[in-house]
Length: 98
Image (cartoon, rainbow, N blue to C red; front, side, top):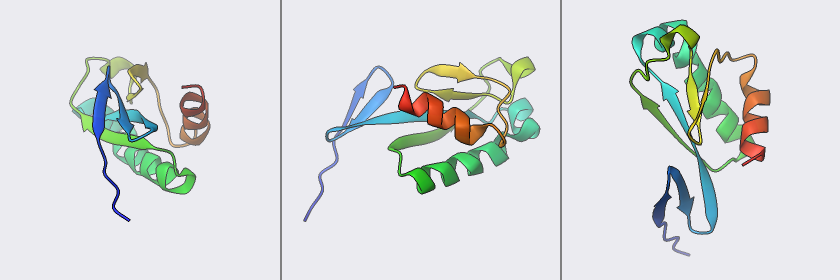
């Protein structure tokens, strides 16, 4: 069986066939990176693998919200002061409410 994947951009939410794919962007600017977003990115990867969520994960440079970091963006919504301790519950909440 061959799976054909077609990416259609709708705003910043992508579709893979019939599935809506959530987009998580992890700020990798120097402030967010040093405050823990490298570890947060690993936690997000683990969460995706464990839950099977359809998620596009990427990184970005600074979004000029350093004072509130570390920051991630989920489906265009900025989430600040993210830590590995809150990530699983946070992702459960924001990905289920889409």
